[in-house]
Image 1 (cartoon, rainbow, N blue to C red):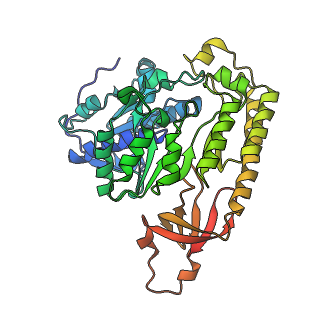
Image 2: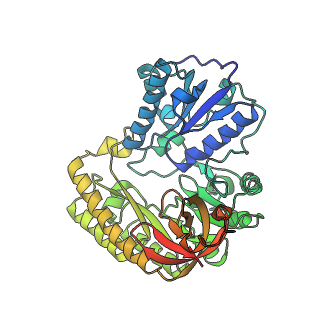
Image 3: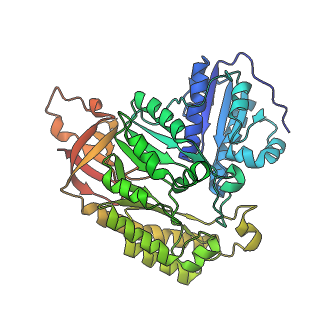
Length: 449
């Protein structure tokens, strides 16, 4: 194991975040500590040769094989920069080092320090940052008008394929008061949209309050001055709290949008996956969502190539997607993760070629559905939040699109070019009304209404 001793006279730190938005939140809190410590932050995208940081901190992901490879490749890139003399020290933290600390220490002796997913105080001390400050403040790496709010850590689910409980441990909710405090700080920074995240947002509150408290949490957050949109990600379908639907339907600040990773529809596959639901319950939940929350946009994720999925189950999945016409759907192929129930009890018996074929067939189907759904929006006027300016156009989103994972609304500024006093950049972070004029499978084009 590495002997970790603190750095001295640190001037520049480059922090690189891999993986999901939950990692991003952790990095933003660490960035706040770094900035308050008077240390220069090198932009994440800067090349090592020109930036010459005293330390590189890589916040890693260890969820699936592709994510682990990306994190390892980033570490190897930093190692090469260190050998060339461009980098002082390499610090690795997060999920990958939480799970594979010993292996990384042996395989990559060039790495100077390894910290797990919950050792932020130790990491701060290593960087010679104050240990007296809390972790509520953040330096946003998103555009300043939206932010992710991590409401819990860990997971109590027993999904057969998933390594998250092995990495993150049991589900642990943050208190409503702590989340309110963090959200108020974000609102003061100009945040208008909160995106609630956790391994399982719908389980929120069970450990602290003895019941699911996502709906009461949302109601409290919606009262914060400045917060205009609240969006829910990573909701689990089993024992879905129906009071959340009521809040979504009635509270104007709650986006009519739900990210609900279903993973599959086949009762047989869901049983093998240990998801706690079957086809009938899954369909009933979708029907309830569509009925209760008029106009709701559903994003889901599906897994193909699980050992329990035969050709018949895959065809069932395609038919399920055809029937439910999800507004957004992502997919990934099964990869065996060591230590999981699947790795101990099943053989990964579907070839990579067949997994790829199934993935491509599913995404081709979804592309057709998305195009048909988007075309229905042409001619309508929608409220959007403007994310970014590009030469000649703006990038925006309605309640139906979440940042980074969904499509965008491209606002054509041609009609405004004749107005000399029009400054498109002033609209960034603000709400606007747009008219949809064309659609593709992913993005829409609009003009200011």
